[in-house]
Length: 331
View 1 (cartoon, helix red, strand yellow):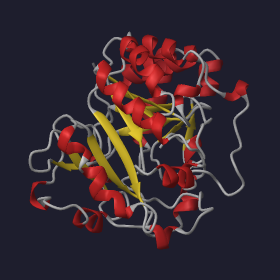
View 2 (spheres, one colour):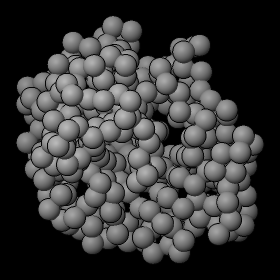
View 3 (cartoon, rainbow, N blue to C red):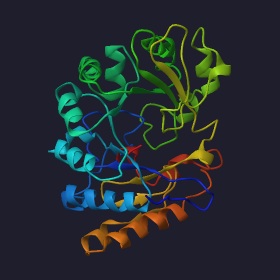
């Protein structure tokens, strides 16, 4: 299997694939001011196109894939896609990110189809607060989905929490304490300046990781470090007596660009080399015009060559850097 290196010597082995820009929640930090503008169905990559693109990515050197959205569990027959992805030779890891609303009924089919690692977005444990953040009164369904995912054997189950001042920062310790009895990875993420600010501005809501850490009792900051079984940018540790892990992701205050290993494929067939960059490379056109597998693999190599050294969120308006709403990128 070939190795995909960028011009800075980083090994690019991870592809995040957005399969839809639709979502069944309306989280205010994700949704644009003017509401969502969905891709026409004809513009979305078919499952067969996604498989061909993924096979080309693996040929170029990708070994890990994560399915994202929007909300990926909304797309019809996505279990069929999971099965096809799981059968790609030399693909070593197949994971999924979800908001958990449909997870209870789909956890077992997902596991049977080859999904092993799962991330669930969860910003609060309080029903009323969940409704205010997401626009829906569905917290109980998310919690039931996480429970079912554990029962069927999905591991690790990573819970992603975006921390916002005055909204959910008072729940950081409660969420961290989920790891005392469960083998979950609860990861706290700094709020990023996307264009979804219908409920306030980034500056007033932003909580840096160094402050988030201090909200958790009995945490030993000296033990924070990358985990051997984690492919992402989180710094992790275990609370005393805990079964799971607590993690922190700091895209704003502690750049992890130097170890970034990922590319992103949007639902409408564009390769993004960085979450925080408008630069995109079209792969849908070549897919639909009959490009060979080697030609498609070459597009992934070109994308890796064009990957920037780092992002510049603190030097400019981050909302202008994304180029798309978060739900259309895949996070």
